[in-house]
Image (cartoon, rainbow over all chains, first blue to last red; front, top):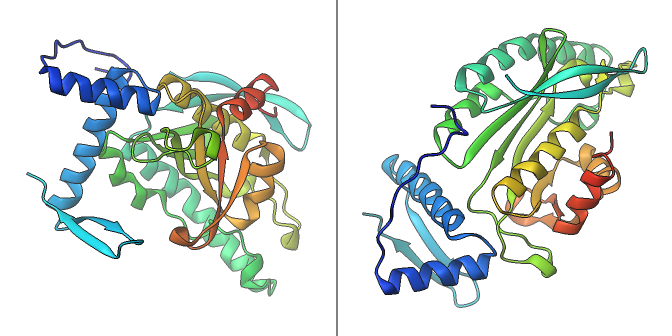
Length: 72
Length: 209
């Protein structure tokens, strides 16, 4: 399959999940499909980097807070 | 397979047919690096031989596309290349997740981030050595493609990048991107961004062909 060919799937979401997806789509000015593609790409990136021993850390300079995110 | 584009052969001033390829593979990048490495090495020798100060050397002289190749296993990474006359003339690597617009009117909305873009060493202008590019217009072809990718992703043409100092004029004045400013998180390289309107203007103006 080429990199541009698309495959279709049906996605079942809860009401809450759909509300979040719609809110993200609105906020990011994206379609819901595009939001899910973004999520998949970022999940793969995080999985790739953490599997190589790196840590995912969220940092807030203003509050001098730092927290490691656990990725399952 | 690829999109037909045109670049300028500097010596003749003629437009030349070229092919813009997307979805470059790890092997493509390794082939490109093998092809370009000898020219990079020759340039280093010439620059040293001519006593050219390091600060005047081409800033991407140390790049190695073979080392960037493993990034292609990530869904968010894409590579494009322009080929003509039997050789790769320019390459670009983009990222399509994890980067948001910084220009206030579109802040927080996703964009295509141009991680690396480089023309082949024989397409560089090196005035200290009296060298001129074989082909011109390659940067515009690739930045135009980044805008197209942004539109296809639903990012409405938004594109961002950090420019090497020698390329700042190209992105700011030739492409018409917003100069956001130096970024301490990226070795103080200046960050540039295409808003949706600027991208439209760049494309409708011919992408500065």
